[in-house]
Image (cartoon, rainbow, N blue to C red; front, side, top):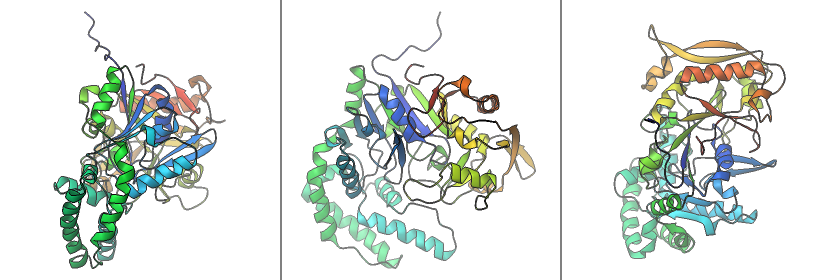
Length: 447
């Protein structure tokens, strides 16, 4: 009797998730895989996410629109798990259209998406300023209103895209919500109140452009699968920034893990056929929070400076310098467990070219004991002293290689050790920013 799981009928779906603190190179991988997909779905986050694509040497930065937009004819879905700033969405559409890319005919927006409105942005920035001035420590948000918008969603008071279909309902709900948030802005945060009319009028004006793109995203994905089409689910941020499983409170406001691809788009979990985890060959983090394998990067000649400069480590959305350190495989092991990763894509291997010694974190010393997986408590993570394994660097370059056998022997040995430690196969290796700079060992849509 064959005990292997049956192949799914119809189309096959792949979920791409970051397994570190974001910025792992998901955009390039999504773009590469979209060649095999009829549609790409964003299922969480907002325009605090940034995916940079390099296609034939031309760089494009996306924040809210799925990376599949760069492939002609591919449908792009923004699922209900995403919070949407309509001003930013229309601005991003405009920039892409100015570059000659067709967007509106193939962008489908879930009417259940919560809206980000100006008072959310005001609350976000005021709270961060208060944390900083009080000495309690900034979370490191992007200041784009993402967290406050999710708070309204959970409190069951959010204005959603569907409310724009009903102007009177929208006005009533907006007036009530604005009164609540103005009370906090003026009475607690010491900021000026926002006026109703400008927010109301601008939203209804933008609704004229948004409403033609509204769709029942879950039903459309299901229909695509039934017709035999593959769908790609594009995660934003990274597992260690997940609101439930990350280094809380230094996390984002949504669930970044693979399981949320179902809840955040309106399909069943049985439709998530393969989970592709993305990790850099080293580790980076933007914003505040513990980072056990972090290296100093300001001084030239140090490993941290090499990673930061060669890797061009600056946030796509904020431009902030990313903190850099060795690959933390013990943290990666936690992400593999949470996401049920089927296979891994390791990116930016070429950034390690030229280093005489390469290290990988394989555990921590914590309060007199040794552990081999990232703790759940952020305060404990901050006290972790990393335990490293060392590997010799390699001569030559890994940049642009497309075959495993082209890699230097020491590079292959490093990857094989990563694979053995985390207990998941490396199915892809990215050796440069362009979509063609990819080594494929097992295709997610054929696994």
